[in-house]
Length: 336
Image (cartoon, rainbow, N blue to C red):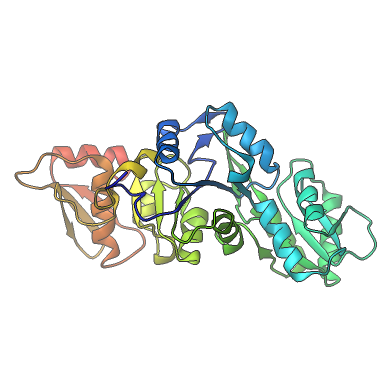
């Protein structure tokens, strides 16, 4: 399929929570968009920082939502964390697992020995989110890390999106151990490279495109890995977050949802827009409809605003609409 954002890419890396689904429901447009990616023959990898579920369970969940997903298309931070350990430790090394059974299984598959609390002198600690983690597990990890054990965190997400709102993520528990040990872990998941590199390698790809909803994990991970990225406005990060993002958090493209994959690159790229005019002051932006042009939509306005602001500054900025249509669009974006 020519003339779309997919052109020139040999794999699409898709974040899950907030990008493909929210809780037990697909994000609007996700089903059709992913089906079309499969139809045109571009491989898909579902890349998740969630270390609590095995790859087959993730694939089964996607199938239950109506997608055609295979276990081999899933890359988890548990797999990446175990791979980081295997690169640094001899086979058979004892690893204290602070996480779910899925993480224990990945450590075992990597040729290491997963152990629990009160194990004799583990040489490493691996930490992933698990709702059954108790104080004693964190205390054992603290003691092992202080004794010199290698510490790997599957991911550093401080929050976890749920149907009721944001709950504590693995990063919140990582921060607890950082405070208790005065040390920092190696991180396997986004925004660090191991998870993304592993997903790209599993597809034998050389020209990936990362797609996600979080600037601090999905987009920062793509920047760290040197790959282009598409941000979708269906999850955690907002239009204001994007507008005020610093350079290491900026995507190349932005779309309302995954259907942006099937628009032309020029249409979804962050840049000047023919339908919008943006005037930049030192601490504010004014958006107006371009004279003689059909009114543009909200996401195209966001692309124009980001291009103008990023070219001159970063950080907080006030945004004003110079006409009624611009004011309405800014309200839709939460920027008014």
